[in-house]
Image (cartoon, rainbow, N blue to C red):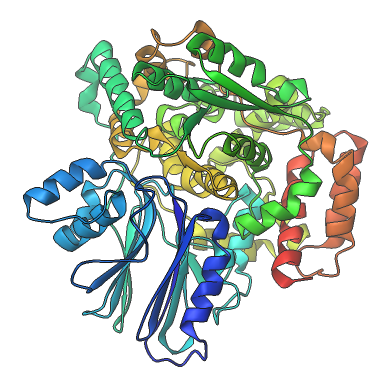
Length: 626
């Protein structure tokens, strides 16, 4: 696990000294790789690397040159099947000087070219400079576990880095991209390839780029498959056994490490499955990690302890005040652009606690998106029945009454009113547009007031960032596919990558093994959502390995009590950072103040909206150096 960066300046017109610029870029990535740093420079190009040593601790120094000196590699991530790839390459005559996965990756690229990406089972973002062709090749893993940002400047300059803040100070266009700002305010995250900046892009998952004197080319190399209706003929027991074997194999590959290793354990199904597989594979003295909350409606730690006792792990539980206000600018600095998922706060604390004991942790990320774990999938199924009620009655009577009920600040899982509000909003959205599947934090009317823009302007920018569906499919399957392509990499995996790397912790996600992903995507919906039971086949596959509690529990989000915080300690922080901020160009201050006042009355929980605005302004202050 590492941080990578580089600059290509063919025409030498950028007026920057490459080696010093790349050293500065790499220094900003030191948290991703505290164990070593490296720099390689050639005519018009410089590559930088920061290393977190996990495998082959004494070797695998980067940037790494091949024996001929033609190719130079910088690599962030892990290739889990590197031993198998090494054996195949040795049969082809390749001789290795090191024992790690870095040299195997470089040899695979030299041997197979871009087609070698299909053979990689791992999480990665890497770049290879070809001295002969004077060209850069870079790629990102299938699911987008590891990030890669890039931008083009004047005079043929191109720069890339693992994190956005590494690019600060370079001659790129850092003006705010309005459609990306609207994406953020709607959903709390920005979808790749967009970033908040006009002149910086993020390489999308399962894509590669090639940059040469002829220009920039970006292409996909993989897409998640579509459901295979022929699988309906397969027996449930056969599919459950195959899934069990695949998850077990994915965990087995991710246990390869030369440093201490543990696992996150929330007590939910996904993390429990991973820890159970670790134990089944013969791991002893498994260290598991959880975080607890003082607010009981948000606290999963009792469930984590229950599973830990059953599986016999050495369990560590972080508990105490999360201090979101004190943490705010740390989050801003590491996420690098507006990012509104408040579960980054407990994730940050979980990673910090975990890093005190181990360097690598396995997680259950991806289980919800692959196996139909979110409540919104169930809500979409219930909506088909609800919409049999005439629309005028739904809109003018039922929805109108529900919206007038006070919702309070309790976690939505314990609030019937919040659930009903989300449900009627879903009905309104999909009635207007069947592809409008995500709840919007700020709706179009809100954005008109907040950004002082016309509705037509907002809608046109929405269309600019829309991703068309692959084809006509079941509404729930469409939701899941959209989550896999966008929400999972751009929200969930982004959250974990930045929080973990801020503490030099490597997090491995077995559900992100492409074999598990392809199996889950092929599965017909009836094996994922059976009636109103989520993750049906996953529960069946691990029924003998787990206690009854995680098998019966429904999804419990990794949420924090934002509503209470903005009626308490975050109120003053919001007033200082947002309402007293001289930078009024971001949003309408009167509207931002109105939301806070309305939240204080307690009738509407604006906690999430207030957090998005607070993070936006804190980010802007930090980036502009205000």
